[in-house]
Structure formats: structure tokens, C-alpha cells
Image (cartoon, rainbow, N blue to C red; front, side, top):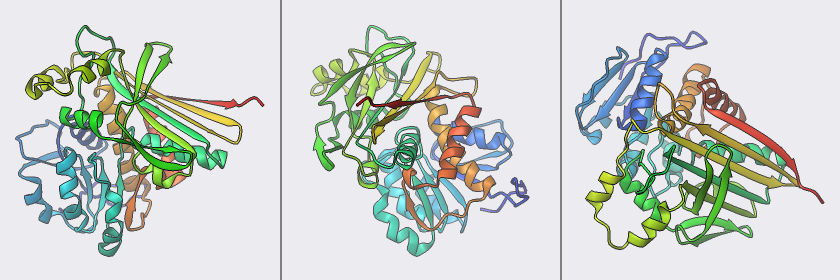
Length: 360
């Protein structure tokens, strides 16, 4: 992959970006970067099309393209869960900068030694949650100095509930089913423990939406190992009744029918809401990230894709030199984390923060 003739803020030649996967998020990231003047090569096994002059498509199997990647390329892994995991080591072998959004049960940090050996730099789980949520938790411990508890609540849903599932899957529906069934890792009294998915329910009030249900899921990932905290949990937010319906039919459902009923409809208005509550040293910080979509995409494509794109823009245009290795979002620099938050705000995603003092 040759280098483009575009130039960054420092006048340096900006490398092309190779995007593996052109689903909802891949399309958003590719077009967003192209509009900034970055040349994007999209790798997808299905025939795709874009009118933007800075996007080039290569219709091929992802594995077959890996040998075309050259040293120091910027690569985005947006392949569905297991596929993204299986190709990860091959991508790292090319001595690249990899921004990895492929969500799989297997965590990429096991490849840290290999990435250092070959000279690749990897930031993984670069979405909204995990991703931005991890960055906010890192900010919290940096500011508070000590964390007693962290609660992360996140969900993307139709703006209005319906009389069926009240849900559309912005990602692979199969990955959503895995989220509903995979045991969740949490921190309890400072220890990592496993609990069944959806085994705990909370209710949370949003000023505009009303009451949503939060169900415990396995979204903490690297946070349970990298952040010192007594208690930490993540909850997936859904309209009341959605998870109850899933629990009634989870042992006897038709996958084809479910995939059809959960199919994402771009004509249906929807929202994404992330709340991070972090407490320590008698203080609590609460972040709310909220989006209802815009002309450039749905709320989930924007909130996830903008975190991915902002990370790439920072690495390319601000020109931070990353050390080789595999890094979770909470292990990135404070400067990058600040840039990502400001970037989302500049593109219309609402980010608010409250500082609360716990009364004696």
C-alpha cells in the first residue's frame, strides 16, 4: 500500500488507511476519514460502492489481502467478532498501527509480546463501550486517585419502544446473542468474579427517554485487569420488556426469524446512551454521552465510529509515536483521551459531566 499525497497538520505525508469490513461502522469510519482528505482502502468480501473519490474498494477475502499490507500502514479491524479475532495476529505480523474494533470473546492483550517483537502498535476495543467508557474510567482514576466503584451503563435502541422487541441490532445480531449469553466478568471486593449474563437488573432514569432497564453483561473486558477498583460492573440498557422476552424464548428461538426481527432499519429513529459513574475518595464523577443520530449516520455508527475515527485522526494528524505493543483504551495517553472526547463533542455528540461530593 503506497502513501497518499495528503498532508497532516505538521506537513507530513499522511498514510492511507486500510479498513477491513464495510458494515454499519466500517462505512461510517471510511466515509468520515475520506471527507478529511485521507485515502481509504476498504477490504470486504462483498461488492461495495461509494461515490467518494478517496475511497477505493477491494472485493476479496480479508486473509488474501493481508500480504498487500506494508510496514507502517494504518489498519482498522472492523470484521465481525470471531473473524476479526482470527485475522488479528496476521495483521499484527505486518508491522503496522492497528486500531481494532472487532469484538470477540478472546482478548487481544495476549498478543502484546508478539506485537512488540514484530514492531506493531495496537489499540483495541476502540468503540463507545468498550472504548470511550474505558477512557473515562482512566480519567476518573487519574483525577480521583482511587476508585471504590464504577458502573458503566450503555445501550443503543429505537427512540420509541414498540409492541415486539423494541430493539434493532446495529452490529451483528449473532454478537448480540453472545452478549446475552456469555458470562460476565465483574469486580467485587477487588476480585474478578464471573456471574451469569443478565443475572442482575437495574432501572435507570433518563430525563428525555424515561425509565430503561439495565442488565449486567460482559463489557468490562480489560478494565477488570488494568484499573484498580473495589466494585465494577457494566449494564446493557434496553427498553423495559426486551430482556424479559429474551429470557422467555432464549432456549427455543428461530435464529433466522430473530435476525429478521432485529434487523437494523435506518428509517427508524434511535439513540445511544452511555453513562459512566465513578466514585472514590468521597467524590463521584458522572459522565453522560448521548446521541440521536445525524445526517452523517445513526447514533450507534456515530458514537462508535467517531471514537475509532478520532483515534486514527489523532495518530495520523497529531502524529503521536506509539510504542510497539497491544494497548487497551484506558492505557492510551491523557492527551489522546481528551482529543477523542473533544472530537465527539465537535461532531454533535452530547457529552456532559457532573462532579458530586459524597456527604459524610
